Picture 1 (cartoon, rainbow, N blue to C red):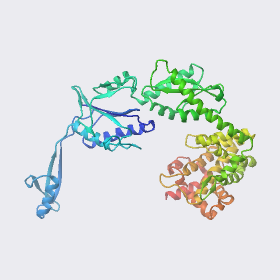
Picture 2 (cartoon, one colour):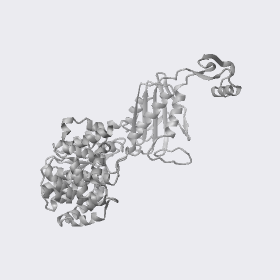
Picture 3 (spheres, rainbow, N blue to C red):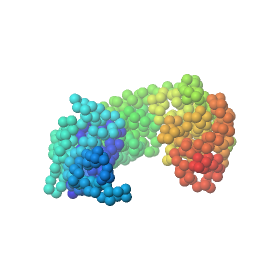
Picture 4 (cartoon, rainbow, N blue to C red):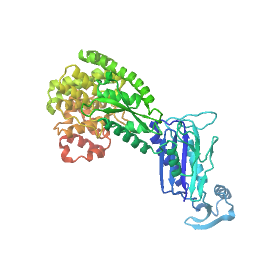
Amino acid sequence: MPDLLIELFSEEIPARMQAGAREALRQRVTDGLVEAGLTYGHARAYSTPRRLVLAVEGLSPRSPDLKEERKGPRVDAPEKALEGFLRSTGLTKDRLEARDDKKGRVWVAVIDKPGREAAAIVAEVLETTIRNFPWPKSMRWGAGSLRWVRPLHSILCLLTTEAGAEVVPLDIDGIRAGDTTRGHRFMAPEPFRVTGFEDCAVRLKRARVMLDQDERADQIWHDATNAAFALGLEVVEDKGLLTEVAGLVEWPVVLMGAIGEAFLDLPPEVLQTSMKEHQKFFSVRDPKTGRIVRFVTVANRETADNGETILKGNGKVLSARLSDAAFFWGNDLAVAKAGMEDWREALTHVTFHSALGSQADQIGRMAALAREIAPMVGADPDLAEQAAKVAKLDLASQMVYEFPELQGLMGRYYAAAAGLPSEVAEACALHYKPLGPSDEVPTAPVSVAVALADKIDRLTGFWAIDEKPTGSKDPFALRRAALGVIRLVLTNGLKVSLSELIQEARETSIQKWSTRKTAELTTQLLNDYSAATQTIAELRALRREEITHINDIWAGIEEAEE
């Protein structure tokens, strides 16, 4: 049984698109082969910045012969009906059979469909796949009509058996399939022929191309952690960045560089985020101090000076980026030490939602609600209100404007710089949490009060203006907020009534923005609570004895299910 090898060689494919492209290539080709009557043993797709590769093992050499029976009109039907049936089957009347049916005797066509060679089927399936490939963005080039993510240079398509390799005949907009590929753009650019997947993978590695994306990621992580360990340091783990960087290089060469002394006092989160977002660098941390002291970059080629020139250039760019971060940090600290009033004023001009006022209005609602929640969770009401008033002020800071993912984290630093209590600073960092099923849940009373206030205000407010999640759409992250409330209650063993919290949110703040009555709003929000969670099953999975204190939610879910 032959093995199939496909390589689509192009200009650089964006790293973020490679995983989806691999799966699309594998699924579309194998589904097409199976629909055409072929079977296969195993299929796996690979990608580098310049190629998509699919290896299919144990492909059947041809599709089976088939016999199809198609029932036609009655034998005494009008001649026109019989003529139409004959046209649809491509047969003549003498090849039809008359058979007894429950409605009388009818004509039956027996159509023989001979099997087809695998090469012909592969050519059809691959052309359809290429012409209809689901790239998020694609382009045309030259005078052709073909669209691809970047200009497609060549197609390699081989069927390999013990007798040898056969090129599948295929021509798409002048790109003729062959048995030739290329290695690394700079270190081994000359084309070479291959005879199958194993031969291709081995010869590509000799030509400085590591075909397997998982192997590239493992190699990067191994070399980076070894280089850090040799200096008594550790690489900050970031699986998303590792996957992205593995999609940027065909031959990973790990290099470690130093961060300028002038930037080492920046918060670790700032250094890490700046290097990741702008340069795709890994952060290297001193485990004794927790400071980010070095960086790891991954080059795409070996050089005679062992990467010295690359590191020198990257260091210059990094210094420019970190100079911006240091400038933002200095300006933000000055505002924080002055009491953050400039940010508070700025947020009065930032719209939270057109029907719910400004960001400053939302902060005011949060503060009022946090004060009411505080006694229920064992927090000091004054501290809870104070924390809620400053928790979101960092949204107006220059650093968060540049790096939105640092919201909350920077709030902790600014609150500390303003001389606020440690409980307040911690609540600034944690009030957005939990952000997902694996995220940490705040347990400090002040942080719990502010986190609950944030989520309850969001849920109550958007339900009040009838902006609820619909299907897969949830632009205001209300499902996440609802699940966050549940996890906060369960993790901290809180004995609170969500009905009372919703009523409090409505009566203390939301009533300014909605005319809906408290009882009506509370009933609808609790009854619709299943819509604010990902699935009813997620709540079903919680043991009933664990949620006796949120029976209101459970009753709403039961009603929704009925």
